[in-house]
View 1 (cartoon, rainbow, N blue to C red):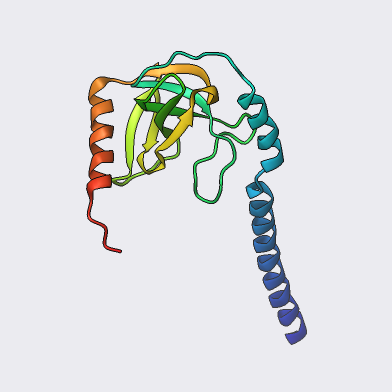
View 2: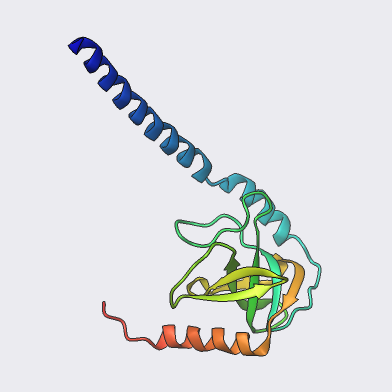
Length: 163
């Protein structure tokens, strides 16, 4: 009888460890980034000579691609993500902020509804982009939201660092 109890205990432990292994395995498999596929797409984007006309306060789907670590990626298949055109420097370069639909809270995010969907501007992921990365226009942002995002970004930049 003691043997059966020990065997049952071992089976429970085995099942528990097996479940953890499966979860970690799938997490690893789905976290692998396809840099080669992105590199091919990036070469194609680089060779694109189409002129795209864009303006500040517009939201475009943009090829953000596959990036390092915690830098915001585009979609796994298309490499696209919506971005806010924060500052247009010329017809080729602009500063943008990417969006996510994952619920994010805190001072580094700004919640906004775009086409009846809740989105969050990831303010700390601001970056300089070439206009050839723009794919298609999505929406325009209300002036009040736009100025609020700029205000938050300015506060983040001007915040004293404790490092």
